[in-house]
Length: 236
Image: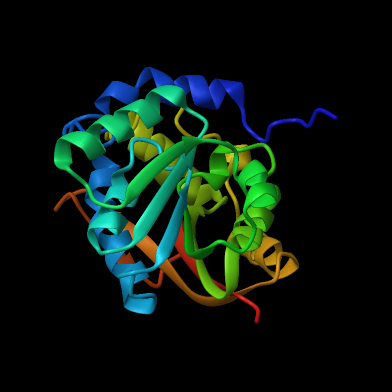
């Protein structure tokens, strides 16, 4: 029986075209490199990563996955972009990153294959790029062990986020390629909270992420009106 893949071919093509630039700190992926230490520290503050089994869903070129491995976790990064995964694998070889592997597989397929296999699952900046984000949340919940952590980050859907994340970031500041985000695919925190609740994930903490165009720095805050993060735990 065939199943529909929960991925947008146009989205995969878009990121595949840029794959060779993932580890160029001055490329379109510069914002990911800038926010990566914030994301990593936030995860580590709640879930010390050393000796844990970690999964990074929608890992792209491996920016977060590589950092998690360097914190002492055993990491699997998964994505559906063949080119991005090749870049991630090449970087891991060149940087001699320990305890990291990559696979081209959907999160739903992996959940059916190895449920309850990970201590911590991250899914960052991905939910706003898939046709069915609730399906991704359910699969992440299925993949984590009871009591394990699942971390999400995505973009709110409101006039301010349209102005900042699309008009500002893509057209005014040119921080991201035009067309990176679609307003209709953005997700309100209340919607993500409902997806988590239905998947058996309890929201433990939320945080906003803000960008200051004057200092060109990102910081965590209580303002979830544009970029935001969820820390959730699977019910025991």
